[in-house]
Length: 284
DNA sequence: CACCATGTTCCTTG
DNA sequence: CCAAGGAACATGGT
Image 1 (spheres, chains in turn purple, cyan, yellow):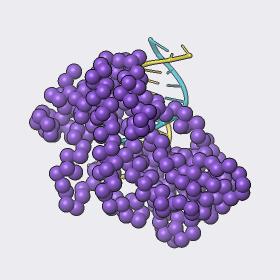
Image 2 (tube, chains in turn green, blue, purple):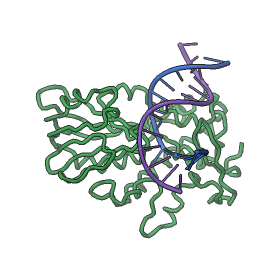
Image 3 (cartoon, chains in turn green, red, orange):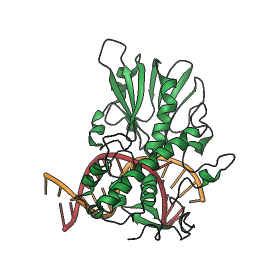
C-alpha cells in the first residue's frame, strides 16, 4: 500500500495508537528488512524504550524512540516497499505468514508484515538524505519543480518517480498527476515550460491531497488491514460511489474510456514500469 | 508457463 | 564524474 497518501493515512491512524507505549519485546523474523541494522542492535535500541511519536517523510514512516535510559532519542525508519503493512493485533493473535518484525506492546503487538520483503525497518537514517522536498509543504514550489526538471532529458513520468526531485510520488500518482495536468508522460523533463510546470505542481498537490482525503474517509479497522483493500488502491466501498469509482482517472484503466473525453486510455512501458495516459487529453 | 504488481538499489554502459 | 537503463531483490495473483 505505499505512496505518500497511503503512508500519511497510515501514520495518522497509528500515531495515537502507538504514542507513549513501551516496547517490551522485539521479534525480528526477517532480518533482511532491517538492512543495514543488525537484529541485535535493533533489539538493544528498542527493548524497553518508548514510542514517542510517529511522522512521515516521503514514503518513509519515522518512529520517534525514547530510550529507557537517559540516552538521546532516536529515529526508527520504516518503509512499506511494495507490499508492506503495519498494524496492531491482540497479544495472542496468530501472526501472518510474512510477518517481518513484531514488537510486543503488552496487550497488543505491533506487526510489520511484508510479503515481498522490499520494505525497511531500520535505524539507518541516511536513507532520508536522498529525499527532495515534501510536495505538500511550502518548500515545494512550482519554481523548485521547474528547476529540478531543467537538466533532465528523461521522460517526465520517469522523472516524477525520482524521490530526490519530490518525495512521495509513486507509479500510480505519477500517471494520475500527469493526466490532471494534461501533460504527456513522454515529454522530456527539460522541455516542460513554466506554465506546464505550474500546472504539474498544482496537479501533484491536488492528486496527493485528494488521495489523503479519500483515504481518511475509509473505515480503517482496528488492525488497519481489516476491510483489506479498502485503504489501498483497488477496493470496493460497500456503497460504491461515483466519486470513488472515478478516483483513479487513468491508472490501470487501459482500454477503458477517458472520463473527460472518451478516448481509450493507453498503457505504455517506461523505465520498465507501466504508465497510463489519455492520448487525447495528454498529447505529445 | 507467461506476465504483471503500490519501490529502491546496485551495476553497467555510454 | 554523471545520466540513463536494466537487473535484482521476493512473493503472489491472474
